[in-house]
View 1 (cartoon, rainbow, N blue to C red):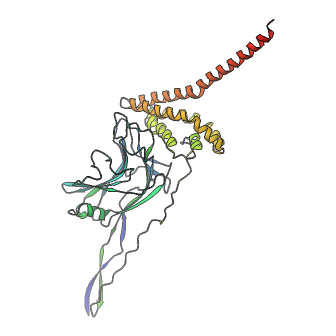
View 2 (view 1 turned 90 degrees about the horizontal axis):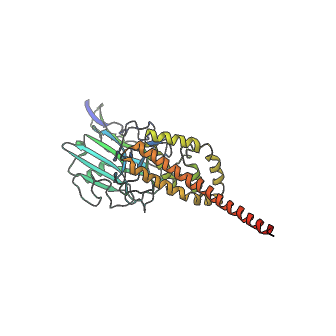
View 3 (view 1 turned 180 degrees about the vertical axis):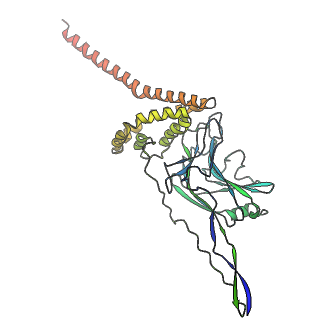
Length: 399
């Protein structure tokens, strides 16, 4: 009886390489960063919008200003590859902004592969147009680079969740055929949102959720068998990987009314409209970007949310009131834009000072436009009416 040894492949083991890809553990595993120290644009975890679970990662582009041209930021994570292969990348991304206005905005996922004595980079562009670089370190998508390969992802829809799946191993081998993926020691996975448009007042950026980078490892096992004659080796078929839904449906949670601009949301019909998003951005990410600014924002929220939910409920139930309020909010949009300009002009000197001055300017202009000027107008009108009646009475009484 012959004793032979058959090499049988074991079950394929799926290994998840991204830590906290659903951002349910805050930023654990990720490092947030900003390209501009004067105007922080670090990515942050938010419960405002998510594809699944409670949280997602938001990467913002703010106003550039003169001192932060190319403002933006994101989050990164370094991954040790060890002896993995068959890398598959998939994620959900939600783009927001106005393509025609935010043409100089780039949203991308950058993967830097560390190999001996060199780095190789894949850049997945998720942005509005194809011919603007995301950052000065990276060339135009139409340019060739020895160590950088740009992959443009088209047909991503705005203001809804998009599913993206890539064969990362195949993309790497196609971009760098002379380099083996086995030589990669580790890689840095970076999410960025960058704006090259100075003083662009429309909110733009992206939400990221359910980011997965998986590999399939197959370790052969040695199984002794006893057989009088050689038989063909048996093979086992790896279990199929889970496929994304054919028609993914965006999942949006109810808006958090303790942090949203609920009157503006009721007026414009959605918390994701550019006007509402930008109001929230100026309040939370500009004025509220530091400890002093957060004190101002907290005080304002305590006052605002003491009466605004009732008014927002009334407005949302009447199209006429929505139209009227939309007209009344036009001066507020202008005030918010000017407040952002004031903040951007001072932020490079001192962030708390910029928050204090911008908050005072915004509040002063709001009081002037919505209270003082209407009061003066009513006083003038009522005075004219009283004088007119007095003059008529004086005429009647004249001999």
